[in-house]
Amino acid sequence: MHLKSGDIELLTDIPEDCAGDLAKLANDPAIRMNIGSHSFPLPYSRDDALDFMRLNRELYGKMFRIDFYIHFRNALCGVIEISDINRDDMNAHIGYWIGAAFRGMGIATESVRMVCSYSREQMKLHKLHTKVLTYNTKSLSVLVANGFSIEGFLKDHFYLDGKYYSFYQVGKILEEEE
Image (cartoon, rainbow, N blue to C red; front, side):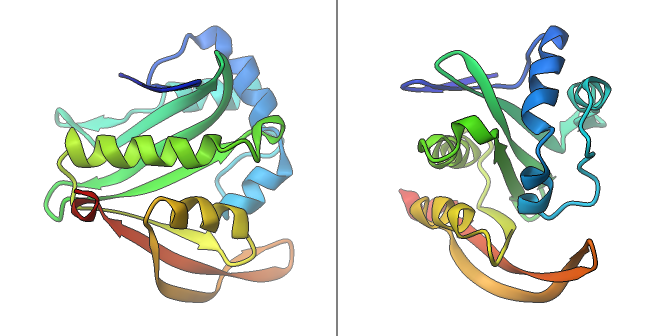
C-alpha cells in the first residue's frame, strides 16, 4: 500500500535492508517515553526492527493492524499505525512516532491526516482513537490539528522509571470530515 502527499509517502512494505535505518531512528529514548510504551525496545536494535517489519498483521484473512513507514523526501523518518482494528464497532487505534531529525517539520501532522482519510475512505471506519501523555503537547497539537478532541483523562496510568504519568484519551469521528 502506498499513500502520497507532497514530500511525504506512507508505505506498508519496505525492504528488510532498511532495518538498520529504522533501528537508528527508533533507538531514541524520547520515542519510548513519548508514546508511553513498555514494549518499545530500548536500545532498539536491527533485530528489533526486523521483528517489527515481520510482525503478523492479519488474522483469518482480516487485517488487525496496518503499519505505514513514513518517508520524507525519500528518507525513512518514522512509523504510523492503525492497530486494534475493530470491524464490529468500526474503530481503530492510531499511533505514530517520528525520528528526532525529522520532528517539527509537519510530517506527523500530514501523516495523521493521510491515515485519517485512508481510514475513512478505504477502510470505512467510523472513529480513530489514541492516548497521549499529558506532557506531550506537540503530539496532542498534531492530533487536534487533525480534528481529534480530548474525550477523557487517565490519571497515573503509565509507570516508568519510578514515576507515574497521565494520559489524555483522544478520538475523532471520521465521518465529521465530510
